[in-house]
Length: 627
Ligand SMILES: Nc1ncnc2c1ncn2[C@@H]1O[C@H](COP(=O)(O)OP(=O)(O)OP(=O)(O)O)[C@@H](O)[C@H]1O
Image (cartoon, rainbow, N blue to C red):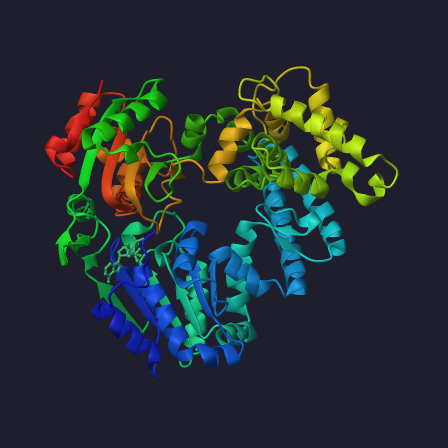
């Protein structure tokens, strides 16, 4: 990661400082293209405020809030400004949660109303004459569940924030927080005052993808408190990649619009490509490009931008590796083969499933994703799914510690998790014998989790339970028993068998999964890398493997027929799958600091080449077809 804070000031930075220090209306919208230094302006402004107003703000117990879209982006900003607690840098969700958490009674009321609302929705389904019998039965079951939850929430002590909602156990999910936060801010005058007092400056980065309801709630705070409070949005409408994002933020009267014409990140070859991509959208043409200092003078970096078109057959994984070898060979640059260095190379895939296939955990992915409950599917992505947690936080680290002979870590993990090492259990036993037994069992575990082992995840869980190596909760014990009793592998995914399907996966799949969530692999999703930058970027385009309703590279490049719905959206000037895919492609291509390669898997490689020639984003000699 390059340090943003030390970059020279631009004219816009100076305008922004002046605005922040003024006594009048300080609200603003900064809008500019990729790599134009919006986040840089943001972190420099944070540092400037800290220098000038920091002591006073600290004395008053106040802070500066900086809200952005992904954890990656939070880390990027933290990397620049450090961990100064004057700055409250967070994702939208954690920001909202920090604000609403103290209002526990209001949260309980909200959940009660939400459940009543859900009951009425299900009731309406039942009452509709054309509703199918099956749906009616399911709706009745849901009503019963919601009614039960209504009684259970009364005994919830405190509500917490988790990945998926589980009201009975006091857990509010991502989507709840996004609803509650803006509602609370917009609906309570006191909340607005408290918010502005606690954070006299609120910056929102990646504002194009921020929930409109949250943007509106903040607008309301800004109108209610025109002076002494500063609301600043930083964004680029052409980088909006989430359906629900606010897009372009229109300034209110008195707000200032700040623009930045240059791109500081991309080398010339990439800048030409992204300018051509953008020409089909708002036509903004960025200038300059990345420069480096050579012999004391600033020179532009040329970089590279290539397209590799490969057949979409069942050898994709090998073909991607071959493509990387080809690039390394062409450039005489081994960095194309990089596996570990996060900043050197990133391969951007459209959906997590593509990474799962390539990293060797396709079944585990399918078990927790396909038709699975929301808490498992979202927990799959960040490693917090309850079925996976013991493996990620204890079992795999234990095996690694043993394998790598890190005895201290091994003991630390066992002391923390193994019931046999708890003081009350130790009081009656023979410590040396116990430790020897434990060592042997951990060795067995290492063998069971080897790549060529045939053990299933459920076998590992049973081993842990039978040998009292870990304390499982009741839900997990039920699952282990269900695994032991299930004679055959589950064939069809269904919401109630995801956890069992997870148990039935090969245990060795856990390693690829761990690499993925611990970010030890060079893969990221195309949506997950907003705000970030890497020396080399490989954008993997594969419509077959990464089928989604939201994006279609085939339609965007013109090799897949648009549907009637796409055509009518286009005709009506509505946001279409083509617009969305273009914006995603723009975001991906604009991440490269030096070299960009777009690897396209195509059914018909010649047709794809023609389509890319027609689009004319890349120089014709930079299109390479491999059959
Ligand atoms: N004034 C500047 N002079 C030189 N380099 C700069 C300047 N401003 C930003 N940069 C560099 O340009 C790159 C892009 O900056 P930054 O990430 O802030 O842009 P951004 O507009 O937020 O990008 P995006 O919207 O594409 O995520 C970074 O490597 C940053 O260090």
